[in-house]
Image 1 (cartoon, rainbow, N blue to C red):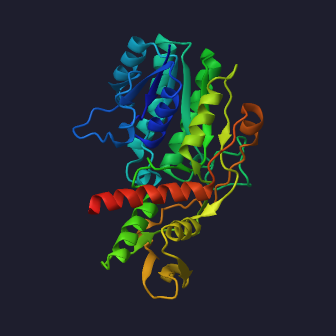
Image 2 (spheres, rainbow, N blue to C red):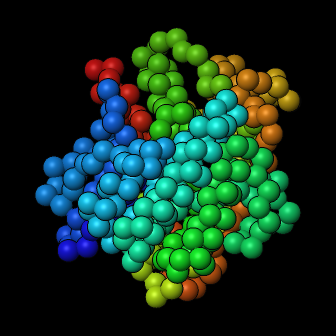
Length: 347
């Protein structure tokens, strides 16, 4: 039975990858989590009691713990989804972001080099590495031009994976993942922030309750959004090729934050329209003056990335991968999930 060690198991991608692998039945998954006084097990409740799943303690900022896990477990794969992954916060704690996102990758690579050199390693890259883009759509050859400490940390990790792959002949991959979301997405991310607030506003309107509008930063920002589970299938495919190769995973289309907002409210049966200009632009109930969403300057980043648009053609042609969940279906599933959560909490 193959053994897979997944870091960041309590997050969206770690949990989705574990679920995907456990469905195969012949893989034992070790989910690494950082020791905490109040861990949130919500994302793994579906498979936490699976006989082929086991939680293990580890910390990407601690070499000894990573060394110990690799030495003891002897994993066939180490898939790293552990990270300080919220871009907006990375300006507040840049050194911590670098230590976990870059240093953590090096600690994993070192542990593999020393204790299990045939272990296949996956490093989750980000389209934020590309930053202020030179051309669209962006492929794996696009220059690295990050505009945030988070993007810079992922770019540095990409370089270190290449160094270890070429220096020690390791099977190590760092793929560029464009934005990917889902029902397990953390509430601090803009997509989940939107769908959670949409659900709260829908409940308030249906029950004649007051509510505060959704507050957002740059609604003109355009992203290439996909479903996380689609990407997990792609990651597993690239981890099982004859030779390691970095790929881009993306939907190959873009949508703005304003578009995401409109589709989310529409699916919740709260149709509205954007009106106004600049900081005064608001999203209102159709033919009413009720404000559903508005702009708040505090949610703008120090340096904005206005457009990210991926080109995943090589992954589609060489891996036989393609996304199965459309943008509309992604938004709808997230809204439905938060509507159900909201109704349960209010009942």
